[in-house]
Every structure is written in structure tokens, then in C-alpha cells.
Image (cartoon, rainbow over the protein chains, first blue to last red):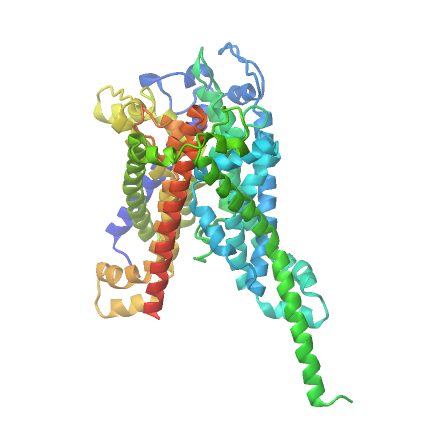
Length: 286
Length: 315
């Protein structure tokens, strides 16, 4: 279909505007991360959009190198929070994908599970804030407070609905003829699942796992309530990057923010094809 | 040599065995998920109900199982009914929804329409436009916190455009803080609407659009009579997802304003969070949480019932 030139011009103008608005906050944080202290402290007319003398000082600072310009040293470096985020989001993903994949297969093939799908949907509907009191009481009782595995366990439960619904739609699409052929060969049902279906589902499994990982990595509220000193995750730790003397350490925050933002953006672009399916609980397949 | 009937009988028995084995396997496979759901749903909800009937707090010096000694005759629920701070937090949450979700929907739909056919650079622009929703919300909160400082880039741009020195204290003015928070939410979640609605637009059958074009329908007529009705289900899904997620709004908002100035941007999640960590009145929090959970469940039930009724009517 031919479009008039005017439409093409309008389209590029509109998209350019949208792209600019999309990129400004990201670009600003990136620029701040590479600015030396004097530049990220600048305000008003002295702001620079592009770092005049780009430096890695902010990154060195959050990993423990003291800064002469700031006269502050960090009590704790960003290394442990990054480890905490990785461990809790990683193992949370493992729990969600393990339980979710098994349940999805059970439901997709054997109609097992009863009310499970609806219960999981409901789990997603609830604000996490509204179930945290009992979780905090239980976690204290079980000594899971402020540990990465306590956080991983709750992440696994919170993202279970996504893992389940995603994998269910993938299993629903998987041709049964292949499984039936293996059954005729004399494989048990469970062996077919393990040795035939799962290996052939490697790509959907990987995309779903990345999707669930992004969700876990993005959490703030739960970590804020369940961790404090020992195993604070990146966003929780970020709040401590300020001091009474110098106020907000924007440069350090921007550097850490950049570190936190990069993995999910890359993962998200990698699984772009499946994003719609994941976000709509498999109701929409692109 | 076995007769035909015998073979059939053995087959039937074998099928029966296989059936039972299948059912058992299905049960085993769903078991871990069931246990996790029970672990987070049934027992905690009972505990929540129990605590909500008392004035228990982690500072009260006794275990939660002893909370009955602090039984307070439904005072938590009665207090909630007249708690002005709760009602304004609820209203504010609904207001955020009423501003952000339609804005995200309209912007997302407009972008999706622009992306319907092929043009140079489409893939690159598409990837860029999706980026905000992958940024960790807490980090997005810090981004906008920096942008909206009175000596920050937003005012800087405004100064450059207006020619005057603009130094608005966005985050410490009640209504401006509200706008800043809404801008951050719209920035982050318009891409989600765009993504889903574009998938919906591309799913509209081409032949129908072509037929309508041949019959002389202009673009607007095709949009209203073919595309919109065809996308109905997808629009409902997109709106439902954003309404649900927006209702929980916490991360960006809490980092930008912490619910302030005062309580100017305090939504339900922020309100509950503050009661949990500052006031430590966990009995009261449990009551609020239960009220929220029950209201949402009822709303979900009604929505699903209506949806099924409509589907039955359609078929």
C-alpha cells in the first residue's frame, strides 16, 4: 500500500520524538555514571549533557576505592549486593521454572492440577505488599530473613505464575505426535517428558527463564522488606549511596543503576519475540 | 493365536493402566507448584486473618501465636473504616490509575498504528521503544528522581525553551510531585501497551482490510469498523494487565517521593509499607491487607464471570 509522503514525514517525526523521550532518562543516567564528581554535582545552568572529562571513578568508588573529591568512603561496597541480586534472582528463577514447567506439563497433557491455574492467576493479581506480614513473620520464624535463599524462595513463588503460564502455552503448542511415537517405542510417560519433550523445548525454556529472571531481578519491594544489611540487593543497597555530608551520591547511584539496568535490557532484547506471550500470560502469541 | 476380542480386552486394560499412570504422573508433576501456592496462600492467609483481629506487633514482646491475648474486638477493621489516610490513599491510587492507564493506552495505540507497516529502521526503533519496560523500576525511579531535581535536566530543558531560568522543585510540590510520578509510570509502561496492541493490530486479517479498501472505506472507517472490534479481546487484556499492575504501584513512586511531600503521593502500597516499617502496627496492616485481598478477589470473580457470560453469549 503506498502512503502519501506527508504521512511518512509525520511518522518519522513522531517516532523520532518517542525515541528521544525514551532515551533521555537512560542517556542522562549513563552520562552521570561517567562524570567526575564536580560534574555530577553541578546544577542548573552548569549542567552538562555530555561528560566533559569522562571517568570510571564512580564505578571504582562503588567497588571500594575511596574518592578524594568526596572525602567519604563506603562502609560496604556494591559487590555483595550484586552477588545477592544474582543469587536470589537466579535461584528464584530456578524454583519458578522447575515447579512451573512440571505443573504446566501436568496440566497441558493430563489435565491435572484442578484449581491451580486460577490460584496462580490470583497470586499475580495480589499486591505483594498485601501478603507480606505473614511472610515476614514466617521468614523470621524460619530464620530466612536477610538471606539470599529466603529471598530466592519468595521470588520463586511470586514468579511461578509467569513460568507456569508461559510453559503451558509452549507445551500446548508442542506436537503430541512426537511424544506418541516415543511412547510406542516403549518409553515411559515420564521418560518421554524428560528425554524427548524437554530437550526439544530448550529454546522456549531458555526464553521463559530469561523472562522470569528479568522479573526477579527487577524486584525492589520484597527485598526492601526481607533483607537489610547482610544480603541487601542492588536497589535496596542503592539507597545507602548518600551521605549526610555530600547528600545524594548521584554519580555512584547512576553507575550502580547502569550495572543493574544492563542485564535485563540485553535479556529483554534477546527474548523480544516471546515478550508478548510472557506479559499476557500466554493469552497472546506473537 | 489370540482372538480379536481378547486383543481388544487386553488393549482396554492396558489403556486403563496407562490412564491411571498418567493421572498419577500429572499429580506428581503439579505437586511442587501446589505446595508452593499452599505455602504462600493458605497458611499465610489464615495467619493474616488471625493477626488482623488483634493489636499484635513485632514489638509486643510475644510470639505471633500468642496474639490472641491482644484480641481487640475488630478494632482494626472499625478503625480502617474511618481512617482518612486510608481513604485518601485509595482515592489517590485510583487517580493514578485514571491518569496513567488511559495515557499509556492512547500513546501505545498511536505508536502501534505507526508501526503497522514496514518502513526503514523499524526494527531498531521497535527495540529502542521497548527499552523502558525492561529497566528495573527502582532504577527508573532513581532516573526520574535525578531528572526532576530543581537543578536538574528537566528544568534545564524548560529554561532553554522558555528563555527564563526555571527552577521548579518538582518533587516537593504536592501536585507537581504527582505529575512527576505519573510521567515516570507512563514513560516506563507505554512500551508494554505498544507491544501488546501492535501484536493485536498485526493479527487483524489482511483480506478483510483489503476488501474494505476495495469497497471504498477510508482508513478511519477501517480502523473503527474492522480493527477495533477485532482487537477487543486484546485491548481488554492490555488494559487489565496495566490496571492490575498500576494498582500495585510502589517502586518508582517510593524512590521518587516516598509518598511525599507529606502524604501527597501516598498510594495504597506506600501506605501499607509505611505502616509496616515505621509504625510496626502489624495487626492493623494485616486487616488492611485482607480487605485489599478480598476486594480484589471479588473484583476478579465478577470480571471472570462477566467474561465467561459474554463468551457463552457469543458462541
